[in-house]
Length: 512
Ligand code: KIV
Ligand code: ZN
Image 1 (cartoon, rainbow, N blue to C red):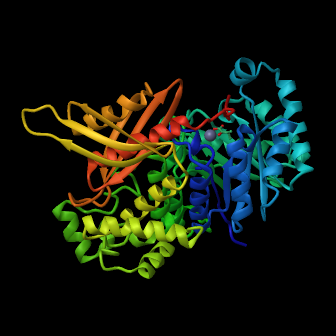
Image 2: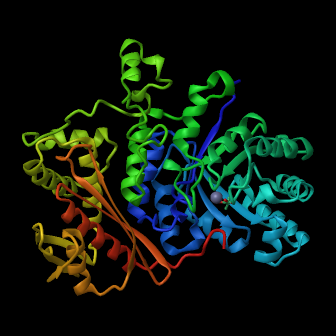
Image 3: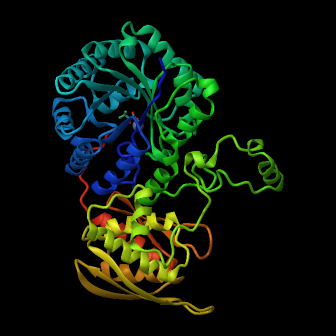
């Protein structure tokens, strides 16, 4: 008998709740495909009842992904649960994840319910869900700050009603590894039917301990499911990071003694896809997927690694998808080579017309940049995805002038609902002038809360990838744009953020 650790990815649900990280249905499907390639056991595809968009995304993913279990979050009421079951109809394996808060603070201040009412509602929700699908996960929200006696009572009852997974969230990231591990252990020991369910950990990273807490929940508490997100994406300081928790369990198998179904070679591509889609840049010193994670800058380290790599390396870079930053394609590469590389990168295009359009953009890029890396192709495909969705604002061309001692000027041409418009402005720098030129025409009134530039493949010949975060009327969105010219990349990112601001997003908050 193997002792398997279930990896439950919630990038598309809890990750997406991070302000600015909202994704389109097609972006979610692309990420779900990458998660399937990674052999994630359970994909939490969304919160079906929160909006029509989320319902459609869960449905599309359930109808398409065949190897992973597809899960939808749902509040503990019949209406939400029925909606989740409806969205999951096409799944090979479906799970409903229902939750209700159990901490005194949340019950009293947020739900305005008594513990007895919460107890009854939790039971009723699981009973209702169990009639619709077999695989039911129950989460007592803010579980770690809940009274253990009450928690034991609720958990015993929902297992009796048919819950198959019990997840104990540290919703606000308050836990300490040893305490959280013992908290789970104690619950498992005290709940009489605890052996009838798989126990799961779900940790937020507010104190930077989400991964450590999750691992303690596994090692001390005996949990056999970890809930996590790619790059640790998530509200506030994020969730437990999939790549870190997976590589910790794999690298220290001597300590954890657990098996994983994950194909770790697809980790880096997943990280890049999530970062490029959401505009949440990965910090260079981030474990496993950061640009410096396997870079040995110090002379002593380089010497050691050259002699015997295990002097300073505890993981093999290639095991998580790093390859030597080789030139993959160039100006002379043909359509077949391009198509094959897309397949190797796990990018699926719906039609030959889409491949042709992406290939044309690739050729345009290859004319301006002699070496095309995987990162360039992924950025290009992200943009291709966007341009196909008949966005309201689409970049056409830009010219700008800057000279020492003079105020920079920019003129931009873009389309608004297919009609070409022009704008010009001065600014503090060429980027500022270009974005002001757009704003002069659009007059969105949005506030820019973040602007960042990242070199996609490291050198000055690289494409610049720009993220722009805009805030307007309480909504926060991220736009991403890539181009060898960072002023153009900035304009594209700004237009992409404006497009997202235009799209309606009437959602019910998961923790609202
Ligand atoms: O953090 C949390 O409590 C959650 C629940 C909805 C599981 O995300
Ligand atoms: Zn959460």
